[in-house]
Every structure is written in structure tokens, then in C-alpha cells.
Amino acid sequence: MTIQPNLEIEARFALAKTAAQEAGALAYRYFQQRETLVIETKHDPQDVVSIADREVEQLLRARFAQTFPGDGVLGEEYGLEEGTSGFTWVVDPIDGTSPFVNGMPNWCVSIALLQAGRPVVGVIYAPCHNELYAAADGLGASLNDRNLSLDPARTIRNAVTGIGANNYVTPALVAGIVERLLEAGGNFIRNGSGALMLAYVAAGRLVGYYEPYMHAWDCLAGYCLVNEAGGWCHPFPSQGAGLVKGAPVLACAPGAVEDLRQIAGI
Image (cartoon, rainbow, N blue to C red):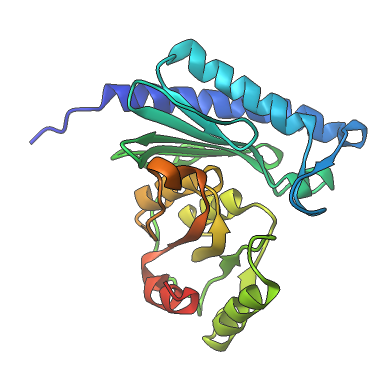
């Protein structure tokens, strides 16, 4: 049986890759002159935003509106704009703003596309590494056009797990997760960008990623990437009111699912 291509998704997939690289180039220019940026805090001193975040999101919204004016857009900086096409873009213009403003390369542009609440496109671009992670429903996942496929032999005991934390969860909760992971024979990293660590799961660099509370713009592009690379993702509430609220995020390679679900308690 021949599977007919979904031309609506494929056209948006092409736009997502182009827009991510354009947005990444703009963000990188700001990164190179970050000492001149005015930095504002959000919920606490570790949660920051700059003009770079806002201008990159504005660029992305403009590109989507030019080509697909009926699509909705949800972005971290400017919220939800409802659409009429059945498609919604979900973007984080700079995921990892804290590393960004402190001169570290662990940040990225994250673009997801939802259809009926399901992530059907996921593109994450890391400008400092010139790495473009891209996936679309039924088309697989790639890193700079190299196909990604997860190794089922990788587990928490022979690979590294990413752990996320933020001011929405208590230090004790995060400490318990780390303790259980270490007791089970695993090890962990945290690089300051949940979206980028989810891309690393899809690329096989991490065996899994868990964060007790994330927003849609942080995780849905990564979910598409991990799914298309052959991994597993804990369901995220991506329809209705749930789309603009936070929820636990867990994504992992097949060999880590049982262990990480137990460690996360989900």
C-alpha cells in the first residue's frame, strides 16, 4: 500500500526548518553582543528574558503569518493566538535564556506544530553548534539531515539521563529524583535547556530526559523528535486549557522507559 504524503504537514515542515535557522541567526547575533542586552527577570532571578527572546519570537510569528495566515501560534513571550486552519505553531524563541545571557552555548530555537493537539512537526536549532534537529509525522527524525534511530540496548545504567529543574518545583522533589536515579545505577546532567536535552534524547546522546514541570513551548518539538526517532514520551496535555499550562515531561529511549517511569513516579 502506498502512503500518500501529507502535503499540508510537509509544507509547514519545510517552513519550520527555514524559520528556525533564520531565527537562530538573529538570536546568535544577539548572543555575540549579549553584554549590551537589558535583562529582565520573570518568576525569580534565574528566570530571565531579553529583547532577543521577544524579537526572535516576533520574527517567527511573522514568517508563519506570511505563509499560513490561518494557523494559530503559541509562544513563550506573546502567548496564544488562535487560528482557523486546525494547525497551531508552538515556539520557544530561545530555550535556555539563562545559558544564553551568561555566554554558554546550551540554548536553542524550538518550533513545534500541532494538528488536533498532536505534535506533527518538531524542529530544534542550536546555533552555537550549527545543529538542526528536525522531525515530522511519519517522516522520521534527523540531525543535519542524518537519520536518527534510537538504540534499544541503551539504558539508564550504560548511558546518561537529563534532569530538569525550575522554580515551579521544590528542591526536595528534584533531589529525590536525582537520588533515585543514582541509586538505580544511572547518572545525570542538566545543561539549562530542556528543549535541547530532549533533542539530545532523539539523537541518542541522552537515554532520557525528565522534568517535573514544563510548558508546551519547551517540550513539544522535542516530543516529535523523540517519537520519530523511535522513543517513548509521557503524554502531555496539548489541547484546550492544558496547552497553556505546565505538566511533567518524560521522554526516553525504549530501554529506559520502565526505569525512568519508576524514578519519575509517572
